[in-house]
Length: 332
Image (tube, rainbow, N blue to C red; front, top):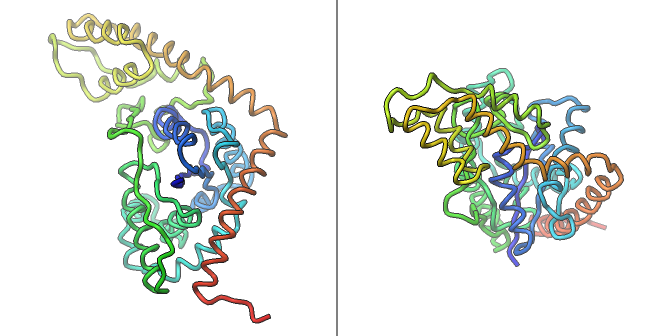
């Protein structure tokens, strides 16, 4: 059985884009593949979160993974830092990662431009740690979007370089994977493309948002003065809202408001109100599960322990074999 590996940074709450995108795929994958889903708290240290915030956000992501339908009996859900072998493999792979290739990483260059006062070694070697997350479980399928394909290419580079350096056929190549040829793109409420935390809190509908918060966010979503000609193209911000409606609303609801727009009869207040109500309904099942699971500390701890045990078993085997390949053997 092939192995799937994927992680989410422990930077807080999961949003609608995660739910209809990656998480929906994760739920399907766990019945067909050997799946490792981890919360990347080591990655988040590049931004220096407070200890309190880090612990809280890690817990949030574990809860939301579970609420979204990931089964800890079928999949391995674990916290990255609970598996110290990841950091050990990270050290070994960094010895074979070169400055020039790390500096050329698009994500690194973007971080340098956006935050020049925090260009730390963790940011530079971020692709190495990402590679180790995959290589440590011999993952071959990684559910990522276009923006992570360069990191996957670097993962293949590091694994193949290790194989050549030590004349072994040890690490497998990992490739991007999705159940569909076209990934689901959930637009944000700020009118700036896909939903994401980088555009601010108001852009995202989080899985844990209350009904009142969802309605408030949707009613404040970016719109315009309305169409002035029949069948005119929708501006990006308006198209985003219609794309959201296509995901959470019934087909006849979407058709109704699309017709109102095309005939210049749309009232955005009514449109947003309907969109908000449909979003509330669409997210209610997972929101209820979040509230239920979040109150069960014993169950959350049990899931984390089980995941750490399963991930550690896989990781210990890999690191033991890597040490032997490298020549790091005890003299006693």
